[in-house]
Length: 413
Length: 179
Image (cartoon, rainbow over all chains, first blue to last red; front, side):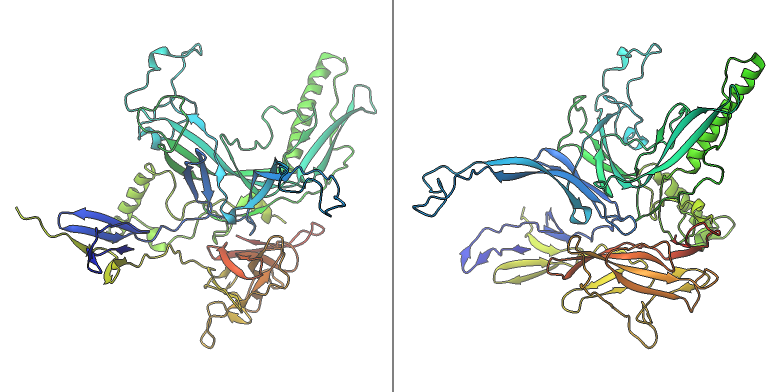
């Protein structure tokens, strides 16, 4: 950074002082003061940096590369391609050049089309964000962090479900909140279950045959990241699902939340307004370290696969028998659910912390015991209490953040 | 009242110099750095290589992996070794390779001072959980189209605990986990 002197080469020039990179200029009555910014903070993997792009008038996010089994995910996006729509009129035999290729003819127009490309996150792609509304003009729970900054919770509904009109007026200084989730997507094999009911050897008895198969991954699917306004974790098996009533298919992927990007409006923003560059971004991370990923091995049932269980079905028999049969059917449903759960190919992400099967990071022994009369211990206890109190004022936990636990079921031979 | 003379003054972390073009200010902005186990240091150019800072594979014994028979942080007779990065098997589609640690347990399924625990350069499979030995990625190396490495991404941030799972009879291959 150069500050021109007051005189250069004998000519009087006006001094223009500009601030360069990593520098701060402070004007004081005694002169201007320059200080250098300290080095940036170390950022953990999966660190998300939201940014407003004025030219595109939209918010995007950049992710510091994180890895799953050593592989970097990609970001799948669509870009505009262009191809000419030139027609082939043949070669002019007099000139030896294509017909209509002279400059006096207008050139063929190009046609644009969409191309889907995969950009590895090591190349720092800008991930387009789409937001959901939270709080006064939306729904969902507002984190305490934002309630402390002027966001109002959603307007409560009356007992009959109608809007409470007395509370619909925003308070002065109210701020709005938007959120967007960034998700890590990992393809995997998936379990499928089909049920067939067939007449059994005895009257009123049916054989229930459950067939388990594996579905392969869509070849076009890849380890990737994407943004969604609202991420819903995959439920293991839907509540109330009856495996005897129909077939069951797992999804061929696992997903985990990377982070949630929040945008906080300036005070007194109009409810329902779209976020722009005046809004303040905040990020709540869920992943902090690189991950390993594994899926369980698919094992064939030990029992006869043709007859895993034989619940009798009701066939118009006497009341006492129907009761018995109903209980058996419930057993069959539970058995089918158990088999689905036991053979699920749902995978697990874990953080290699060095602490074994626990996701807890190895701790400094000196900080473990905070009781007793020793002064250093009491001071340490006070520091821990202060750190706990600070947690409510932050969206992310302190270093060493948080790890994904290792599934101990993988250690069972 | 007389106005004070305005001067340019250096403050925290800055220095001021002067030459024929005017004043200049310089400072040392410390880099954002996080020293941790298995941190890679890439040497680019001809004879590209990577050095790995000290890290341990935790098992029955805590083993420091080796490069060409020398512990990755060096020893009393050898300086810190560097792993040569050769592009002969580089996948020109991905232009990426990995620096990995391979651990081969003894008959008891643990690592001891005689076990093979070494740093290798891989081009396709950074993680191997089944087979005779286990492999875990420590760093990803990005290559230019001219087959020159230009960036190393750190993958492992902690010492790794090695666990060997011996399968039940007929239950598939042995497994190696890095936790």
